[in-house]
Length: 371
Ligand code: AMP
Ligand code: MG
Image (cartoon, rainbow, N blue to C red):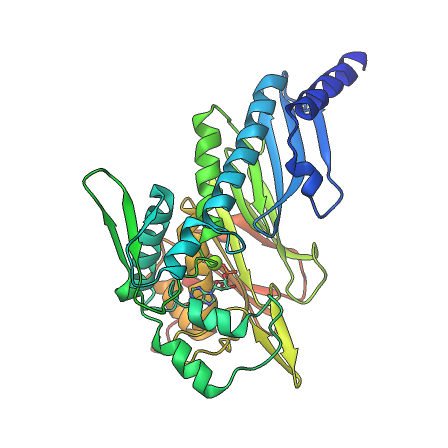
């Protein structure tokens, strides 16, 4: 008992001495707990911090207090680095691309990599995921104080600037990356950035020797290794109409990102209508979808994030057809009535619906009308 206490104190004070100032900025009461896990000689540390306007929950494991301290430092340093690089609320390289639209603007290799991936996903999703949706997002400002429906003229103007094929990502002979968008265009990486950043952070932790841990970037979860002893991590999936933390299902996974897009995230209501934060690049209006949440489990965080947004926008029937033609994507979705859930065959063994009012079917179980 004494030894455990000592360990607990040692690990805690190491982190305190490391002086991670971000803890103090947490919107929620900062939680920093260190416990010796049951496995011999394993230490863990769990804490919350606020970055990118998002509550980040981290849990790292290591075989010594020093290792755990090192991993915690990597988490905070990396998330701060990405925040400074990509935040929409600061003067970042990504914002400069928008401010200086029409010009080739120098960017970091990470911004270039994420943007190139975003352009590929825009093509693959036939523009349902549209990284140049920024003009439309900025017009509606859903979730950022917007509470008015814009005029059709404003919407038409914003939509006329949306076109991902006009984005140029280039590299010069010295290796410097540049992005140029068309004049007036605006890149918005809100649907892919957290997935991308989570994955990059996980890669940094693995490179530093971490065997297992969990990062939760505002509901975008990255799992490193197994939870313990080859046992999957279990991630609760938010029931869209209930308070935060009320789950309708549990997804098991390891070494993967578990990402969810849902109507509950950000929206505003006017005249009895709810306007959600995912917008159609065609109509310039919030998508009307009969899906209430989409979860994707993938080893590629950016892809999972972007596909979630695209599939949410497709609506139930198109999304179900998409699941059949894309069995490589592990998808789990809930319809707007919250009575029906559908899961890709590849993910089915790892999903448990805990809410008895929701029925679950797998895509392979859906018969074509001809049979
Ligand atoms: P997510 O929560 O990952 O589904 O991303 C939603 C965010 O992506 C929104 O808040 C917007 O910033 C942005 N967004 C909205 N509609 C689209 C779209 N059709 N394609 C790409 N990004 C979008
Ligand atoms: Mg997304």
